[in-house]
Length: 468
Image 1 (cartoon, helix red, strand yellow):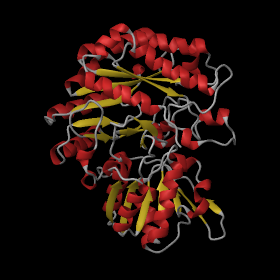
Image 2 (cartoon, one colour):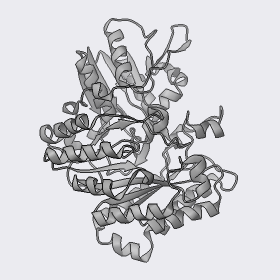
Image 3 (cartoon, rainbow, N blue to C red):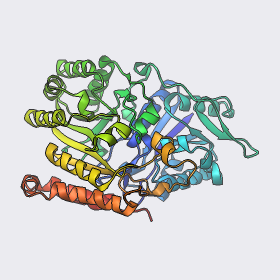
Image 4 (cartoon, rainbow, N blue to C red):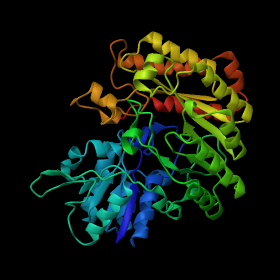
């Protein structure tokens, strides 16, 4: 079969990166464009199963919905599978419906938003099935059924609709146990030169070296999508991918997309050893938790080309940390030491912070502002606490309440709490950015890199746009 995997266009108001927030997606800096690596992983499994596969990335070519429709139809697919995100869901479904009507071929959709709200996706004949959870093996089985002209009954991990309108949720598919058994992502199907990251000179790619996170933050889409159990690829398998992307595709900027990259410090050290042994000229970055770092592993990472680490700070209040943030930052002195170590080793840092937890007061927000000013990272990101469907926070706050998915950008508060309105929470997020970057010493530091400063200013004004 000819299978076409589609990363749909972002909404006109802002760019959406669908792989972020555990597959729910987030609005991002317009200068950030990650490859649709989830689709590349699925494509590799489909190719291994004997299918002809194409990946169409609308954002990489700057296509709108009409252009994306024409391009997918021109590829003459036998099966189409689309990615999705919360904030772009209405537009994604419109495109899906039009592709399905134009091609008369089966169409599947994947992503965390549709995984946790699968039933409503079938209104208006948008899709034939929803691929829930980890997509690789489920989509392979969907393709096998489509090739045989059969339906989807009994395919684990799929939701579909009978002819009489009944929505059928097939059994959950188990998480992939042996990640080394997956083929390397099909980067040969991507225009790898098209992807970029703010401040980096040259194309960027992403690598998923592990899945799952044991910290169980109440708001996190990653634990929802990937599970609480840490599943990891062997260092040898990861290094094989790094060799492939560097020597076969000419890439040297890598962003590891693991939820907590340094969960196993011995594994990270082995990956670093492999990078050095292979002589790979890579510059890379990752996300992790402060409690999973120490000076020796940071030294090893720096030696192997690590240039940037994004660190989950979330809140400066200890009670919020305990209730909602996996207690990942309960030692502020250690946090300051980690940020100092990174600076000494030449590793840039970004602090992820969140505003608007259920019990959060303005005084607690102030604790976060003061902490991040003490840590003084190279960059800071303030997000609105968002109860994505299926997360513990969603179950705590929402029950069966209606959600405005289009507002789930990650930076706009959907609603207030007992102490702050939604508008006040969004205002505090903006205040956090101003307070951090408008300190006199900070301004002097930012002016040393005027191009990056201009990018940060552009991002600030982009993040708070609303969908029309």
